[in-house]
Image (tube, rainbow, N blue to C red; front, side, top):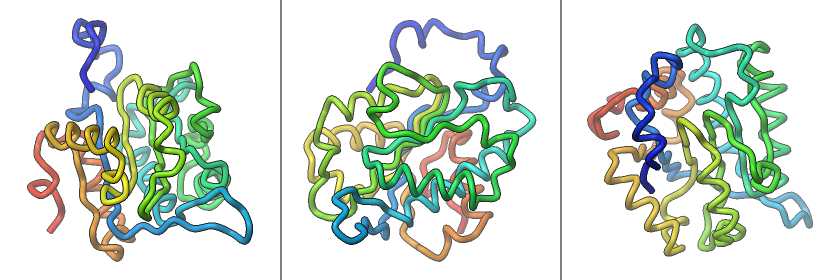
Length: 217
C-alpha cells in the first residue's frame, strides 16, 4: 500500500486545512474484544461492539475538527461494510442514536462495499465485522480492493487482527500498516466507553507516534 504519484505531487493542502492536520493516512483499529453476531436464521452478520466504537469515533472526530469541516462537501465521509446487516445497524446507530450533530450527519453516507463501487469519499471508515476463525466475505479480494481504495485522504479500518490474520492478504496489509506506526490496539472494553479515550483515537490521526506511545494511560 503506497501513495500514487498524483498524491506525492499533491502539496497544496492549504486548500484543505482539515487534511493538512493528518499525519496518518491509513489506520487499523484492532478491537480485540469484538464479537460478530447473527439474528435468527439471518446469514448476514453484524458486530455491535465495532459499530459502537465507529459511531463514537465519528462523533468525536466531528467534535474535534468541526471548524475545519466543509459543510458543503457531500463526499466527505463514507462508512462501509461488506455486510448488509452491519450497514443497517450502523445507520441506526449513527443517524438515529448517536451524539453526532445533524449538520454532520448529512455529510455521512453508510453503505455496503458493493454500494461504493466506482465512487470515493475523502474519509472512509471500514467495518470488517468478523471476529471468529474465518474472514467470510472479506476473502473476496475484489471487494477488499474496493474497500481499501475508496478513501482520498484517510482510511480507518476497524476489525480484529487475530481474525484478519487468518487470511494471507489481510495479514500482509496489517503488517504494512504496522510499519506506518498506524495500528491502534484496543484491549480494554471498558476504556472505549470513555470519551477521553475515543478522543485519543481521533488524536492518533494527527500523531507521528506509535499507539503505545500515544495511548492514554
